[in-house]
Image (cartoon, rainbow, N blue to C red; front, top):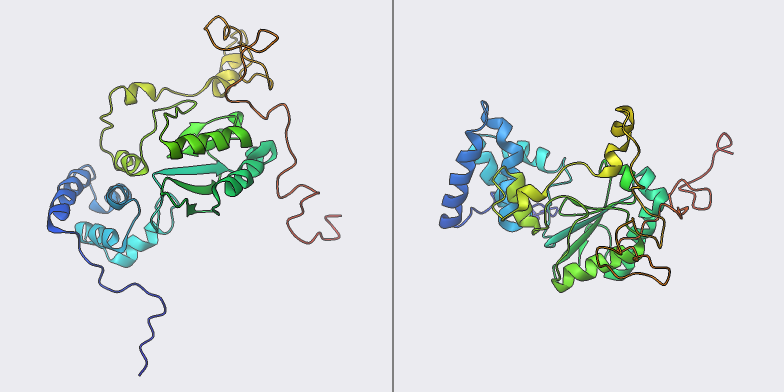
Length: 287
């Protein structure tokens, strides 16, 4: 009889080396102890094994199953349901471009296409140097800062194709990159360990995480009767008041150039639902 593997992985999956297994078991027990039912620890355990190899491997799923007395099928069902768990090797920096409704019409689709061409990769593909994995993602709950790019789940607001290209170039070159808001960047594996529930031990990282940005709080402040503040997002080519006094370079008109220009003032018709870019056949009702 001919052996037909159908591309399935060899079972059972190999185990971790003894020293790695011992270290992960200690971390896993600490996680499991937080929950009254051990099964509830599966999501953070998947983050834990992802922090080890950068993605959830068959070995990692086997480890989670053994620690929680589950079947590998039960673990796999969860690991394949959530997009935050990677199923193949990926880059140090997960660059996600929001292409949901508002970000798309504000330029998200154009940003994603520009990065695909600039990096020479497709969706969920990684650059040859292993630095950047590009993906389009759904809503990041940051619509008031559209279009939004995320790097390892940290926000980069009000992006354009030009600023996004500079961002990935800086990441690949190892230059310091600061999110618009939130904690400083760390690698994807380090992020996965934090999501597993272990403290972020980088000096100042927790304090830097902050809270909602000014645009998110504008409606709340108006509801409280507070006077409106200055414009949250300046038009292209302008800078909020005080930039020149802070010693930043200025334009010929005496204004500082915006290091993160917004596309709010020039929305593009880039959504798949745009009439100029039909997503599929148009029915009579649609006409």
